[in-house]
Length: 207
Ligand code: GRF
Image 1 (cartoon, rainbow, N blue to C red):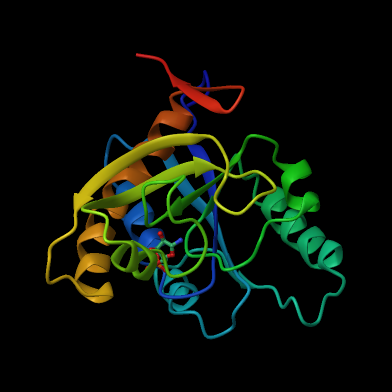
Image 2 (cartoon, helix red, strand yellow):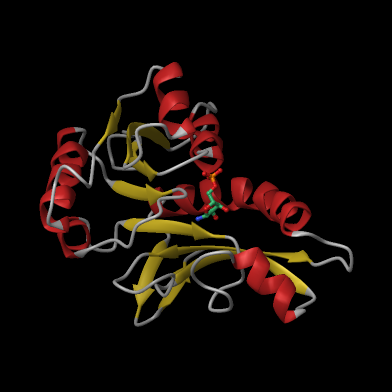
């Protein structure tokens, strides 16, 4: 939170269901929350998260990557909307695109993502399938800063979730998702408390 007690402004990018967006939004409505959702942007016109954002009365936009090529043009439009809404922190919430240089350069150290595994294990698509195929006994979720790789940026917070013998992608995914909904808002809160410092590839969290 800044000195005059203004709430931090979050811009959410999503592509689908949007349950992490909803968790962030619901947290933002709590009395003591130090942030608010300023805008939601989807690359998919039928994303449920986009519909929900509209139902909540939030500023919500769809930006078509197909209509704006190359990628720089598409991202420039997103940056324009984020800046118009005075966004301080960009939260990727099931945003199914690799973030390019336009966005990264416009919000250095101010883009975060949630991934449904304990990174650096099992980055990329189908994390739960990777977890089950590999036979690991513990999975979880990770909130991290975004860099130019796929799920490679400095890790902010993680939560472990045990893998059960009879788990399917769905059952494991559901239990991990419950934890995602908690740790994402926690990470956003820490960011606006100015408690996160990136040092090399680590994030130091001050007390
Ligand atoms: C979540 O599992 C998140 O970790 C991953 O994509 C999924 C998005 O789910 N990046 P939702 O759209 O937030 O419900």
